[in-house]
Length: 323
Image (tube, helix red, strand yellow):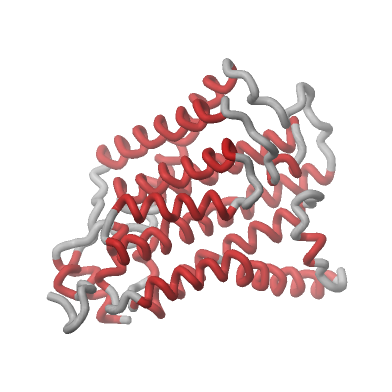
């Protein structure tokens, strides 16, 4: 059944169950809604997150008597500080509530449907994926150890552990999971559902957000670095559809960032980690190793756990009717 004069599916489609990338089709009709949401997310990427982070930091500075926030200094990733990394993490974590707000107000769907087709975070699977991501990272390190061009930004001797190192560690452990989840809620969550709802094709719902994910990390990045991020986005997008939720992407994202920041603190510098230089084409086999190993293992685990990849249509329709 469709609305008069519209090809946008409504309630009865929800009763049959929907894959993750088509959940918005059970919401309020109108192709303008995901388009408006996409614009809102892109605006959030360049403005809203920074504004929210500035407000949060200004409140903290006022309470601690540190005066006025120097946003330009905090946002300067070429000269990073622990406070600057915290500012970046808070700004990116803003996408969790922003995506939820857009899902409810624009589409009339409960925000919990962004997490998975359950609809909620499936914590057992998320924890299992953290273990799987460790296996994939080990495979990556093994392959990287025998290929050239893998240690350009890493020294052969460990850095001295300082107070600044400790501050970085606190920021990474406490805020990086929220930053990684924020990016997943944006690119593999809202944007996947938006493009899936607009075009009704899984490949569009995977490739377009992955391309935007790569671009969001900097227009001046080299092709190998862009490919690395694009490949990550493709794998995370496939996992969303093959497993029915964001858990696998979040787990891989968190462990990737922990590894990158950990190596930067131990053997490199944070500026190089936040602003990778030219990169190397030898990174491609390493990236593909991690991506394919993780993709295979995460899908196998999801099947062993019997996870659904489609919604319970009755629950989704009830969620819509309550909004």
